[in-house]
Image (cartoon, rainbow, N blue to C red; front, top):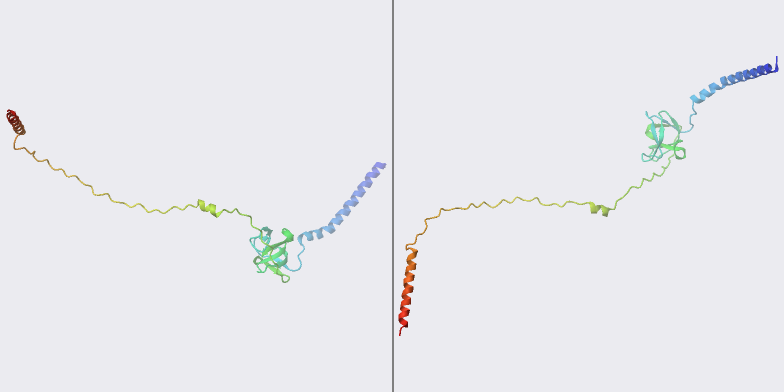
Amino acid sequence: MTIYAMKRLLFKAIVGVLTVTGLGLGIFLTPNQAQAFQDPPTPTGVVITVIYTEPMNVRGGPGTSYDILGQIQPGSVYPALGISPGREWIQIAYTGGAGGIGWVYSSYVTISGGELRVVEPPPTQTPLATSTFDPTLLAEFNIQPTQTRMPTFTPPPPLAIPQFTEPGPAHTPKFPSGIFAIILGILGTAGLFVSFILRKP
């Protein structure tokens, strides 16, 4: 047997021993690891259990005005840290919240393990600044229409219908107009004749 063949045989023997040792350790460790994944550690002390049938919100404070930090599933168990003064919200240990805490609505959970201390709520978040308008400027654009009286109907005056009369018969003078001219001519001639006579010495 050559040295090369001996080395191959020794290598196979070492690999076999290591394989058997690894399988043996795996058999002993696997049940413990499976149990560790199946049975998570249960919190001790005062805990809450979610009894709501749907995922419930975890908020940053005791009220709906606070931000939603996340959700917890029905049946979940979390350590309880305190309760709001009105006993409507419970403070829990929640990794998604600021400082590792969050708040849940008390009607959706049950408390077990003891009494909770009253915890003052954190300050509410400052609302975003909203744009404001100058009331004087708005008054300039607030134009109210002036109320005017509706025009009244004035009836027109009654229509005057002119009355036309038939022209009467023309007035016929009793004497013809030529007679007056003749008479005036005679009188003028007579006057001239008289004045001529009177001028003679």
